[in-house]
Image (cartoon, rainbow, N blue to C red):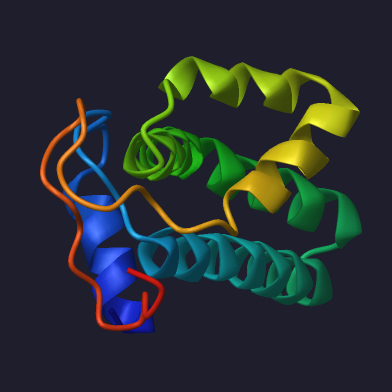
Length: 125
């Protein structure tokens, strides 16, 4: 899955918390979110001012919050884990644990959340 395919898939499944997502889909969308946030902050800050730039970038983060949570839930489903584990993000240490956890490959074959995601970049399957 390419960068643009992952972004299109995540926005296409804007609030879909069921199903599974590959590692590539999750990490490409995370990279998009971080880069877009930085670019929006830098551009708006340079033209209008730093305070408005920060506020605008936070509005962007609010807009991508739901698809970020949805792709995170689908990524956990790929590992045959409940999406309720996303609540670990409410703690500082939990976010680090989840980031490391998202690096691991999903379960092979069908699990309770659906059929496996076939991604050629997941060579460990």
